[in-house]
Image (cartoon, rainbow, N blue to C red; front, side):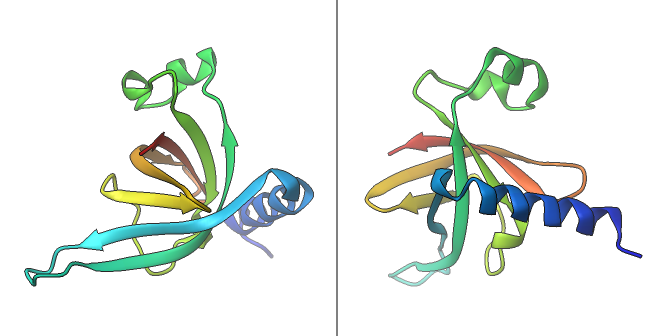
Length: 120
């Protein structure tokens, strides 16, 4: 019998397949300062659906006090992170656009991240 988490994972994949035109593909990057002159970058290929923040988000998101009018809410499947750990030192690149991860939440089933993205 499939676990409830696997059912949610399949549901997220279905949503990302059905709404394929809304899905942005890019990379999630974390620069690692290992003490050498050049920092290394850990990278994962990711998918993200952009949304605008709404009034209801202010009531439910733990990072609501950080939201600024130009910020983007990104929804990203947790399974896209393989080499990296989600952190506020990370950033996403979609084509020529770069976004800093200002804050994030992971749902209780560890299926999807809600990201506070700020264009840099």
